[in-house]
Length: 156
Image (cartoon, rainbow, N blue to C red):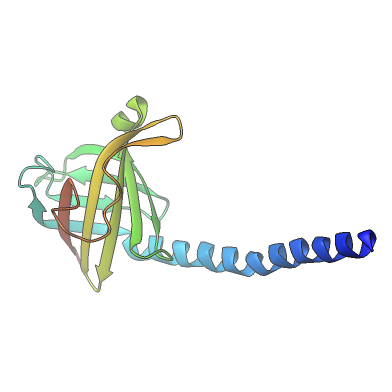
């Protein structure tokens, strides 16, 4: 009887792992597709609070997970890395500048992408070990929940 229970338990674990594999592959494909959609140049249309992006007028994303902030003349002001996850609700958008990475600072955010309009809301904080020290990730694109809300339009 004990062998039977162990066998059934083992089959349940293996079955669950096999069932999760297609979900993981689907998530990986969805993220790759979303990264391709993100790639390109985006003009900053509005920022709340005003001035939060300093002199940046444009963000440039590549599908490999890097970004740069550019001024009106196209000069790079700062750069960093980002991750997105379109399989969550709301969609996750986390990023950090190369300078912030050295200090442990990070930005947790969410995004909405509709056509050529990208809206993001994020909070700034830092990791203390595995613990997040900062406001919780926003649940909505709302200045009341976020440190910064940005609306961008794709540059064609």
